[in-house]
Length: 243
Length: 113
Image 1 (cartoon, each protein chain N blue to C red):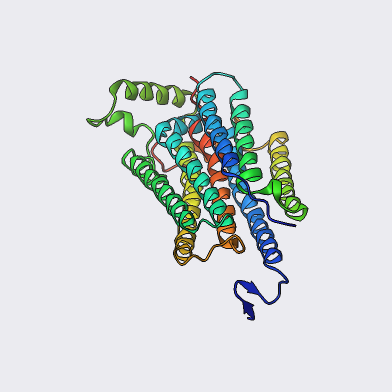
Image 2: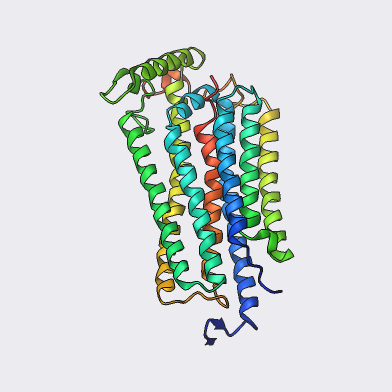
């Protein structure tokens, strides 16, 4: 394809090229909105029908890790926005620094997610044959707070009275939890790959005030993934904490 | 149209607002507002999402064409959510609260509670 510098032959100016690329990215994001929207819809319908099991499932999640991850992800959005700004004002070194910071924060988020998944595995909360919502309070480990476990046991016993199939319906909650956070994490992994590519370009000074479309476009994607988490956090972690 | 550069100052203000929003979300989740807990959580999340779209994603400074695409995405999402939930909410259905039982307990091979 004919190309002069960063300008492809079918565009008049770099500005026009950037506007087209941005519009294309937004159209892709519309499909992503509807994709995640379907998952949120599934979640809403099931949560309404099986609110007891969903409440118990939600309360097993670690708020400190979840809220901490929210902070980490919003910070990574800030550094991503700052990377775009650095490119726009021509501070080439800062572009690299902010992109690396974004990648670092994204990696922290995924690391914390891995710790959370491991906890659920240890507590027999992965949907399937070994799934048992009573497992954790019945098998305390040295690091567990016994008072907290007694409260949890009480909570599950009360719940069983209103929903005898709680182990069955609880699996719906955890299927949605792993499905939604897993797809979100998959998007983060793709984003991390895109960031690596951007960082490589930033090392050779590719992004300038005249041409910074890739940083802007990947930024749009990264912020979108942040928005998905902004909804996932309260819906998955916080739905039944007020008792 | 010349490019609009959003200043770091605005980014910092938005970042702080998002942090405050997160703090309020966590605080509100532990208060008992009855049915309104979920409403409050979703309203705060939507305000945060709007801030991200308008400033971090530069929607406020984008061409009308791009803004139209963004509004359309919300509109299509609203169609999907509202019509589906209206259907589930108004019909006698297997997934109504209280009557729900996806499988008879006798045939469930999962550990029974």
